[in-house]
Length: 165
Image (cartoon, rainbow, N blue to C red; front, side, top):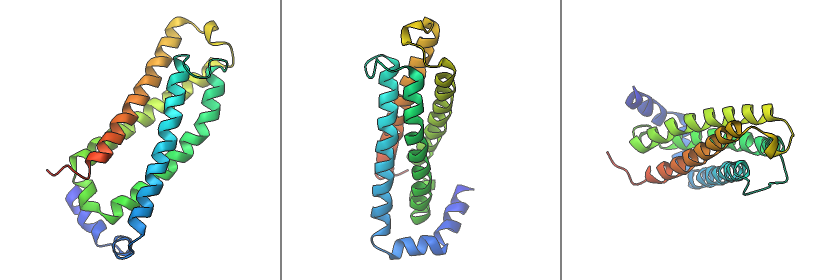
């Protein structure tokens, strides 16, 4: 099924235009990498704040509110630039095991992000020490899990270019 989709995408006008215009693929990759940097940075800040290593004067809810917008916009840009990159080189992407692993990890990261933001919104603006220990531990686990997922996503993304199989 993925092979058929890759062949179909390869024959589209957009794929042809991306291959024929020398600057489109590097520009799209650059935008994609910058969006990854934004989302990863927001994830690092949020994860560190859940451990009290960063912004300890702010409650979780304030960090969540401040970083959610950056993350959502970053993910939107990642989605659009990712579609363009897949369309430009569908067989290199869709049929690559590293790409497939990256996509599964992305779904996991998005689900964890949604869960963490839901939890952070529920915590309110009280001081961190007023939050029950079990809630703080689960919030920290979610933050660490998101961070781990993004590191794995970035690694898998880099390996797409080198994995043949």
